[in-house]
Length: 303
Image (cartoon, one colour):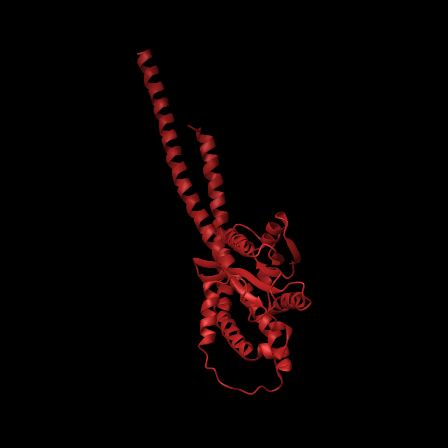
């Protein structure tokens, strides 16, 4: 059994760790409250905009001849991967990257010639990809994800659109964690470019979105101005909105995951302290008992 001094040191160390994890939990909770409202209120707007844009593109996109709607057989797929810059957020990055690896393996099984190119927002995803030899076209460092704004989404959307228009990639996906609740956030693979492309593996969420789009009334309409002018104004805004929504969802998921991880760590530290204190008290009682036995034995020997 460890001596009393060692046990006191361990109790003090675990207590200090629990104070740090509790402080990090409170900080993650505060940050989550700030971004959660934005993520939850922006999500319906982004989904409605996506549904309307796809409905409009389904009717006039192919006829317009614009490159946003081309349906060439894909040879290279671009992926925008949104992860965290820092760790200590539980399984947030692990689950996201594992799902990405499984999805890529599934696609390569069907199309072995398919190539992948990545755009990264978040240091963890960039490190994971480079260590495995994947092609990272661009790693977005500024602004940090904690300080994201619409200007950052505009910059990323332009980079992805340029890569698609100059045929560096044939289609683009966004991969991020969607914030469902305080304890639930799911890896999400979302179609990005071309607007109506369905050649890539889809998720249930995209199927639901498409079903909602198919239910919209099929009515005739006149377009003013022409399709080129209209889509030239709408599509850049649509692409920026999709990226910004994904970044908000990813940031909210990161803070929620970190909050859960720090709470679990704090609870584990409290349980460990209780166990160490029991061992400490038992060892202390044993020492006291030994000292009393020595005193009684000495007194008996004298008498």
